[in-house]
Amino acid sequence: MALGKDFHRLWLAYAVSIAGTYFALDAFSIVAVRVLHSSAAQVSLLAGAGLAAGSLAALPLGPWVEFRRKRPVLIAMDLVRFAALLTLLPAYLLDVLTFAQLVAVSVLVSAANIAFTSASGAYLKSLAAGPDLLTANGRFETTLWTATALGPPAGGAAIGAFGPLATVLLDAVSYLLSALSLSTIRTREPKPARPAAFRAADLVEGWRYLFRHARLRMLFLNSCLVNGLIMATAPLLAVLLLGELGLPTWQYGLAFGVPCLGGLVGSRLARRLVPRYGRVRLLPILATARSGWVVLLAFVPPGIGGLFWVMAVESGLIVCAAAYNTVLATYRLEETEDGYVSRMLSAWRISGSAGTAGLTLLWGLVAAWLGTRGALGLAGALMLATPLLLLGWNRAQNETPAVESVRGTDS
Image 1: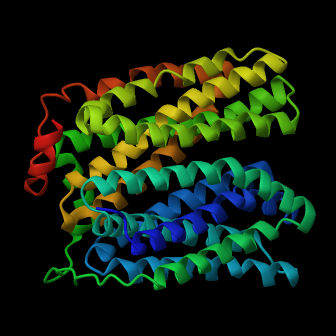
Image 2 (image 1 turned 90 degrees about the vertical axis):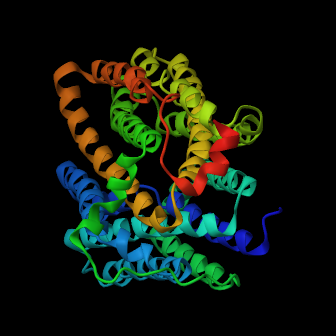
């Protein structure tokens, strides 16, 4: 069954908004430094507070999203992000932009991002069923890595030519265009069943669902730890490459931009491997394959050799991560009953964001204690141990009746 026009409209909406996101990557930090002359501590606070407070604000959104039609939620979250980002432009032009406003917008956008993610996963599952779901997730993953590779350099050029608010404005417009694309989808959604009354337990139902299912629990814990450790090494690599090794800024951008093309390879590789080996067999293999790269970053040599070393390591990591993410995104949607998808995805995203924020802060302290290379080495050593979270994978059985037919062909 081929993916229909409505899927392509959803895909276009995702492509436009993710392009805007990566075009404006680090835009808030740049505005804080160049416009508000904020300190390093304030910039760190801006990044951490936005992520943490946004995750907290998104906590009640999981149950709220679950029991509503998903397309209106997606459009609403796009419009919320558009309006929030747009408030920065007049404040900047009138010279009344403040650090507090930046933090408030960051929190609002972070919360809307989580709500959008939890709704989009459930909506994608309704538009792409069976084998099409893997193809759809592969296309989304390819789009993500294309935006990651091309967006930041283009955004940097735009900031140089038009000023620090240029990328923020274009990011806002991307959400408006995404909402317009979503509004053209014609497939009618059935009205979700609503509970008789809200219960406090609904706030944590996404986590309860994950922990009731052995394989989903393993994947959840593994992914949160791995993603947190990878993101925690990003500022350390910046210090190592730009500070201690003295790489020019353009080489630093090259070191992380070019390997993102490996995401295209990984997402296509996943679509070739799944029909041959099955999702259940592939997931622990790919999880193990992506765990062995970070430790090599502790041994970056000086000079041009260091540039190629980082590019090679990052390329290997991204190929494996993109393949894993494509299979994971498909598997967790198939393994989750329809009435729990939004809450499950919301719990996953909130935990991932909170874990990343905590590990990034912790690894700054570790670097002060062990040095940059020591902190990178410790992160790499822990990464090597993350496959242990998948011990017992082959013996584990989820208890989701809705997916018995899928499991029967995969396990």
